[in-house]
Amino acid sequence: MENQSFLTMNEQYFRTFIAIPLIPGRRFLEHREALMNSFSGERISWVDPDNYHITLRFLGDTKQSAIPGIIDALNNGMIIPETGKLNLSGLGSFGPRKKPRVIWIGFEDDGFIASLKGEVDRVLASCDLPLPDQIFRAHLTLGRVRSVKDLKAFYTNIDLFKDKFSEELTVNKLVYFRSELGKNGAKYTPLKEWSFKI
Image (cartoon, rainbow, N blue to C red; front, top):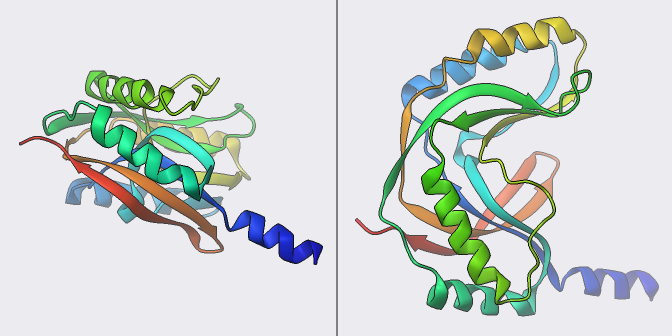
């Protein structure tokens, strides 16, 4: 009976986040393939390019009953921007020097991202969703590092590829996603999409 109650309680929550989807070009994917090959001896879970995005706000476990209210608040309160362009810049890693956790790419000018995040945060404040304590850093996650055998080679490869990912990407929508974690990686299901102005 306790297990049944626990499952029922869990079914009332979705793991959710709000993000800008990203669609990489051919040259990006070629560099990605080369980067993956250079780390072939390490345990790294590479993100499927179909799942590339910039997370603006991670909401975590969200009551299903609260989701329609969040969507309505964003529908009615958010100022939708025009379709924009973002320039990728640099390759790096998050985490301690001896235990990197994430391989990521940054952006040359994140004013567009910061402005849109400000809009999202402003609206979500009306839903009594407090701002996270973590400092926001706009980035595209390429892979999650499980373990590293050769730290020197790891950072050498990061340096070799740091200037390769420098293309311009068009961004044209904001999406409220549900995330479901599984053995083969995360599955993202759109709960609501907002197209940017043309």
